Structures are given as C-alpha cells and as structure tokens.
Length: 357
Image (cartoon, rainbow, N blue to C red; front, side):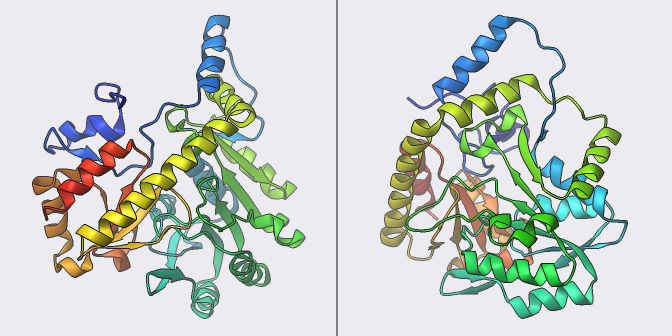
C-alpha cells in the first residue's frame, strides 16, 4: 500500500499544487522517503505521548538539522568574507549557507570521466591557497553524484586540509546508504590528527525518514571549537531540542537495524530496476552509477535540451518532479537528480512517463 501524503503539510507532495504543477505530478525530488519510519520508533513516540509531559529537553550533542549545524559552525569559527571550499556539483544548501552567512564561496569542480566523479587534488589545494580557505565542506557520501569516497581519497583531501590549516565539516548524513562493495569511512577515523580539525554531522533523518522531526548529531573533538559552536547555539537561543525528536533518534539507533536492512534491500531492487529501465528504454539518458545515497544522478545531455526545456518537458509533459542539475552547480547543466526511496510501483510509473520524452 502506497502511503497517502497529500494534506500532511508535506514539502514533497503539498508543494505540487502551491507551485502550480499538474495535480498528478509524481514528486521524486526532495530527499525524504515514501516509507513509514520503523515501528519501534513509532511506538517510542506513542509511549512519550502517553507520558503526557513535554518539558525542556537536555541538548547533549544535538541540533535541529545538519544544515543548521553547518551554518552555526561556520559562524562560530570563521569571519565575514572568509573563504569556504565546496566541490560542485554538490548539495545546493552548501552554497546558500555560505552566502547567507556573508562568507566567500570557493569552488573546486569535481571532474567527471566515464560516468565517475573524482577530485582534482592539485586544483583543490590551489583553490585553498589562493583564497586563504578556512573551511572545507565535505559531502560524504556525495550528494548528488553518489560517490562513496575511498579511504585514500579522504586521506588525500584531509592531508591537504591539515597542512593548510583548513577545518573540515564532514556532512555524513547519507552514510547508511552504501551499495555494492563500497565502504563508508568516517572522516576523523583515518588519522588521529584529523580529530582536531573536523566536525562530523550525522542524523537519523535520512536513514529512518525522520527529517520533519529536525534532529542531528554533531561530533566535535576539539574543545575550543566545540565551545565556540555551543556559544553560537546559545546566541540563537537554541539550547533545548525537540523532545520527540530525541525520543525518535534514540529508538531508531537502538531498534532500527532490521528495518534498515530491509529498506536497503528494497532500495537495491529499485536501483536495479532503474538501471535496467534506463539501459533498455531510455537510450538518451545515462546513470552515474551510485555507490551510495538513495539519490541517483541522471545525465540527460544527449537529449539536446536546454535546462529550461528539459524542466518544462519533465513537469508539463511527463508530470515528473525531479531536482534540476544546475541548482547543484553550473557544471551540472543537463543533469537531473531522482529519489528512488519510494514504492517500486511509483518508480515504474514515473519512468514510464519519462520514456515518453
């Protein structure tokens, strides 16, 4: 049974009408899943509701979300106009939060070869030196291109940051979604020296479909940096996170393993279906094979359409809502990001519509 999400204040579904899209649009854009959270989480929330008291909660190492935390860390350890490095195409709120906080965006473009993305380390270090970069926003696994960085790749980036005095904010929110034989490496575990130059941001929001509860886990080993970040949170009057979010977070991590394993098997099935469908029925579209995340990077460049034309065709002819590639960076023109964390019937219907392009 496909859950009905219309009328639930869902960004994914209820914005269809508000943005003027056709009412039967299939939304496969924003990164939340069309699956209920684990029953153990729902039961834990129900138990807390029956308790009936929702007083102030103890904050521990929590924030309302990864982007909230990243923004707070940026304000805490950098100054106006300081350079902050990102590797585009990348999750577009990275760019926005740098600009919104009055810092300078420095871009190292990811390189693409035979459908695989990688970092040009020479350019990476040059951009750091030329722009006196203070912070590197690492997306690991990478959204939207689906790379699960190897330990060697992370070490190379980490060593460059270490010798140039660059602090690393490692967004590892998609770390539980790894495919095939790939392995996610938590950044500071590579070298002890990295512990003092990084903050690791994780959350149950993607893994257990809890984004609406707004909870994230922030790990900062460096006492001085952690103190600065805590003071920044105090400036924002954020000292007591959502108690229901904390209940859900604890229940998910303690009891959600079986649910997650079942989910991963389902997503692998969806991915195989997508791969086969694109190969057999969409000759002008290709997949950047994902190593991680449930977000798949689709290359429409052979269709010969401008970004505006492609968007119009997907929305008005196919009635599909994907994420436009160009919002992740100029080099991603001609790409679209699709969310496969949905019932396979939804994915099948969406792909059939795309095939009509």
